[in-house]
Image 1 (cartoon, chains in turn red, purple):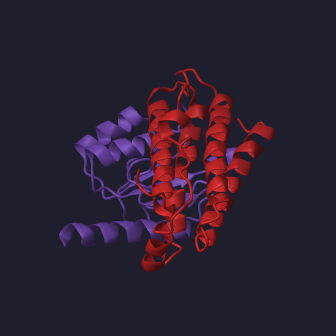
Image 2 (cartoon, rainbow over the protein chains, first blue to last red; image 1 turned 45 degrees about the vertical axis):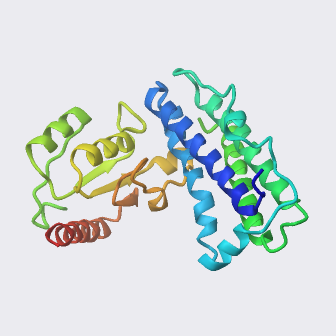
Length: 151
Length: 115
């Protein structure tokens, strides 16, 4: 089995983001409810998070961080498995999409928290903490929309 | 305002009409609203159509969507896949700034096209 590194785990997270955006694109193109469609555009901005955080680091520093070995592989975090059973019908409401997005982003956040808890990740703290912060904010924003009955 | 600045302006109130207009003319710029009366994401959807069938026409997106839903859409959300627009302006629009932006986008595009 290939050695787990911060980089390989970030690639898994990136794959998760790609699957999330594919899920949203499919929903965007078939959903009938306008507000739900508007929310697909909003949630799709998640795809930028990893790249935006990565850009905060000089390329050589980022490469160094990516090569940091981890003591374990998180085998539960496989995009296919995370999205298993996640489907929204074409008449899905904005609330249904918000609830689904909250669940999915929570899975990603748990993964980052697991990554942050790896004893061998010294040096990657800043990167992982930034990812946690951006996802926590995203989650807070989505929950605010639910609480305020914005849709 | 734009006419006063010497621009020729066509106004279309629905996407069907706008598509026909784009097929007939090749405008230097499209100014789009996000929310259409018949579709809350009409502007985003239409921008993707323009990018697909009329590549190279700059799009200035005007939006009041954030005051309706607090979704913070901005120029940061511009991307070729989801929001292939050239610039974003929040409503209510500062007309002087809009005129300046329109000129800038047209100039940049003609520089880019002639290069």
